Image 1 (cartoon, rainbow, N blue to C red):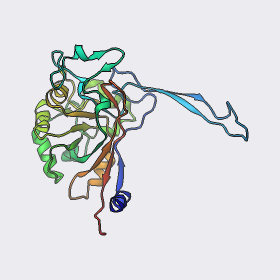
Image 2: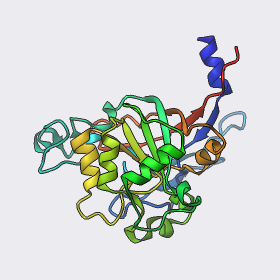
Image 3: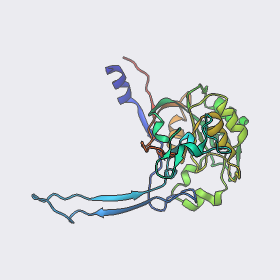
Image 4: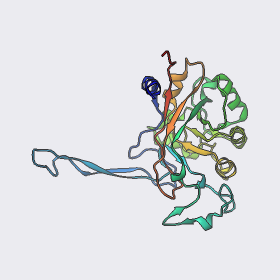
Length: 272
């Protein structure tokens, strides 16, 4: 235990979450993030001069850096594993099967596929479709091998636009993984796939076929709105684009998704 703790304390910790603030980007049909102070310092002063402040927040479960539960999508009314959505959902309780509270805290190997880095580190063009060839090239360039159960993060470069909401959303025309790329990922048996865009898949996508393939057909979670710029910089001089991935969604019963605070730990070699 002491050896493990020493290694963890020496690890470089990279925050992969985008900050939340009023006016931040969000999928147009999801509720935006809202925050307001409910009590300011000095509103109520205790004996001895102490006071406290607090705030109210509200947001959709698919706003900000978040994870999609497998129940987020269905095909012809059927969820992943064959359950009929109509039989397991309600407006008050949510969805009883594959909801976000059933996702265990993640401690897994993470892999960065820096697709933007293949093109001179520029953000991918709007509407750019990430194909299997791009993923294979990024895997080779990153010196990694994707194993079953991994969390694979795909960098498009769009995370740098988070403070520019209109540019980040871009009228719902965005780079992302196409269906062939999604199949390439699912064939490797990964646990989750994530990216630094609002949708993960290439937009426009009238059928949202990548979400359907990963969530419904394959049981692969999707993580969106990641910040991958710092991670790419940290891994630039490393022999492999892999790391320890730690994250846990808010435990909201029956929910189709939840905010996520993921971190990457870059472990130092143990000389003990």
